[in-house]
Image 1 (cartoon, rainbow, N blue to C red):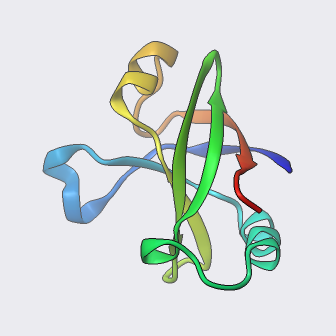
Image 2 (image 1 turned 135 degrees about the vertical axis):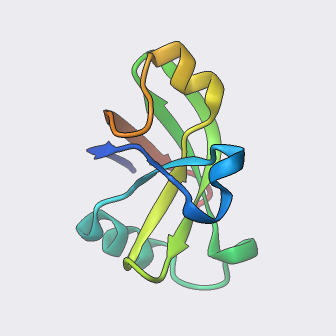
Length: 100
């Protein structure tokens, strides 16, 4: 299943010095993902995904953010550099759920 959305890049407050950068999966898509992946999950409730941002593609995991009732997706430095995006920019993201 492929899901697409636009989201702003943000910095994780607890790890600002390490520049951990994320986008939030919209609440409606996060709810759809939760419905599809109910049952035991990997560490921290992670869900494996294949991601596309611009011309960059990689496999990673999304993680539940209980404070905002959504999943968050880490955007690694190599992708931010290749796609010329940074915190505050909006990225067009496509995620494919793996191991459903």
